[in-house]
Every structure is written in C-alpha cells, then in structure tokens.
Image 1: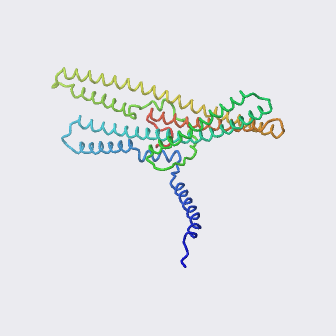
Image 2 (image 1 turned 60 degrees about the vertical axis):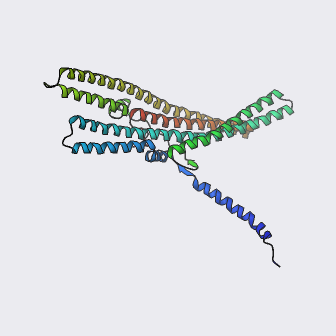
Image 3 (image 1 turned 45 degrees about the horizontal axis):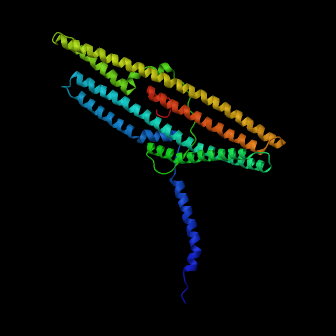
Length: 354
C-alpha cells in the first residue's frame, strides 16, 4: 500500500518556514548599508551628481585651454577667457564638493537624530503609562480625582501621538539620506564623531574669497577682462570713444565685484559666529547632561533609602535620556554650522572634504 506523503509534509513545513524566515532575516541584515558620517560624505563626494557634473565641466575647460594655448593664432582675449573659464570651473568643483558634503552631513544627522527621537519618545510613553496607572490607583484609593486621571490619559495620548509621528518621520529621513548618497535598502548609521574645533580665524576665511566662491570668481574674471579691454584700447589707433566705454565697463565690473565681495564677507562672518555659538551650546548641553545624571544618582539613592518612589527614578532616567538627546542635537549643530561655514567661505572646516 502506498503511504500518503501528507504527514511527512506536515512535519517538514514548520522546519521550512523557520529556515525561510531565518534566511529572510539574514538577507535583511546583510542588505543594510552601514555608514559613518565620514563615509557618507566620502560617498557623496565620489558619486554626487553636482560634483560629477562640475568635474566634467572642469575637464572640458582644461582641454579647451590646452587647445587655445597650442594654437599660435589665439588672441590674448581668447586665451584670457579660456584661463578664466578654468579658474571658474575649478571654483565650481570645489563649491560642489562643499555643497555635497553639507547635504550629506545634514541628511545623515537628521536621520540619526530621527532614530534617537523615536527612542526618546518611546521612553516618554512608558513614563506616561506609569503615571496613568498611578493616577488610576489613586482614584481607586480616593486620593485623586477623575480629572487627574483624565489629565494623565491626555498626556499619554499626546505622547503616543509624538511617538507615532517620530516613527513615521524616520523612514522619510532615511530615504532622503539614501537618495542623497544614491543608495538602496536599509541604512545602519553609527553615532557621529565629535566635530573638530574651529581653529581657523575669521580673517583667514574672509581673505581670498574672490578666488574660491564661484560667483565672486565670475565677478573677478569680469573685472579682470574689463581691465584688459581698457589696456588694449589705450593706444593711438583705437577710437577714444571705445576707450571711454571700456573704462566705464571696467568701473562697473569692479563695482560689482566689490559689492559681491562685501556681501560674501558678511555671510562668512555670520556663519563663523553661528559655528562659535554651536560649539558653546555643546558645552552647555554637556553640563546639563551631567546635572541630569547626578539627579538620577540621587533619585536611585533615595529609592534605596525608601524616601523616593520608583516613578521618580523613571522620571530621572527620562531626563537623562532627554539631556543625552539634547547633547546629540548640539553636537549635530556644530557639524551643520561647520558645513555651512564651509560653503560660505569656500574652505572646508569639517575635515571631511579635503
């Protein structure tokens, strides 16, 4: 008699489902991309669309300059313009790198802080749930009112909504980072390293802006070309009107450069102050965290001595978590400020670009 295979299949099915689940879990883990802040910036610099485009434009300008220099019939104005185009594209490439780094830093920190916000919101919900149970117990013991319970329930509902919002925002933030870095799949982010100290002076960052910022390089090129036209027109075989027009054009070009330079210097000064302020806020956040940890230690000691309730320790633990999150945000603020200062000045002060 032929035996039915169904009993054997029933025995094998749980094993197959277990193996399949384990395989899927391993694939998920293996599919996650581990990132650090420096590696995220490095990837943005290597594969960023703006950086790639700027690099190609610079190579094209360099090739054109070589061709102009090799051509014995090239005019001085043509050669000057070719040289200026190389300078402009080089500045554009540097600016693209700084912009890509700023976008990667911002996206990375937002995603990392988003995950930390979910954890913190979960801890807040846990405390609110406990407070609600305490309020309900006090109501049963007639040491609290129904209003106290209603308030505790409302606080819990609000905290649960904050948690749901944080959870919903996290995938959006991670997807934004993935798009910036041209990545697919899940991301595993490490804690950002400490930001470097701002060691360069404001005067050093303000000097030479016309050679680093693309808009100023263009303005400087225009002023230099206009000045060249004045020199070429200042002779006895060029009409006086042509020379006068060239001088007016040169004055206007120089005025445009001067105005743009003053605006850029103001932008650098503001960004520099923002970076200094961000670093000071890290110090304040560290002090607040230390105070929160001291308060937690004291609450634990009071609980052990019988002079504090367990909920007071939980509250102190939450305050430590909040202080840690504030420190994380403050440290991220330094990275953001340094990245902003870099784009404003054309100088990398994060240590992640050059």
